[in-house]
Image (cartoon, rainbow, N blue to C red; front, top):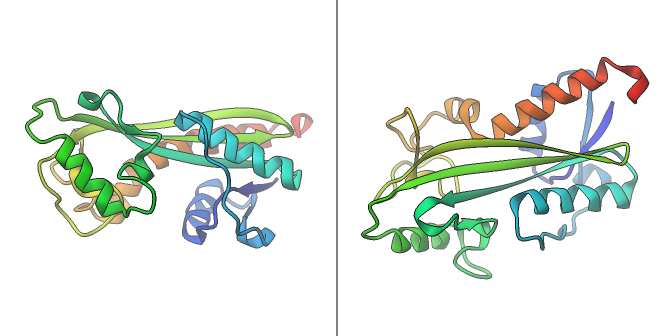
Length: 198
């Protein structure tokens, strides 16, 4: 089965290819010579993932999937959520976003938060959504040098390290993206075993 992953990140492509196995021929946007930005104008994580997947499907006519991720903090009514990548404003860095979050959380006792990834799959013109969630908490200051985004201030439930402090293979095995990808992978493998649906 040939699929497009709506990303220009070769590392993410290889990671997903290894999960899906040899029955799937994955292509990313760079291999299609597409380097433009894809619209992300919806007000939910699900909406953005679906918007990106439909955009690619409409442009290339190929079954594809796209992902979107956000950090949802309970005390901030789910913020930064769908705005996680631009929380501190246009042109701001990941570090700016993280520092804004810590300022917003100063003095707040409820530190509960969760990372959520949604994978949107467009397969033969039909939309399917797959979700991965990791519950945890926001700590008071950054810890660790690995990861990216809000990883230095997020400790998943059941662990003592932030995502940034964890070995990459551990983080990747329990992450929100890995859980969403596993659900997508299981679905695709089940579909691949039913040739009449392809």
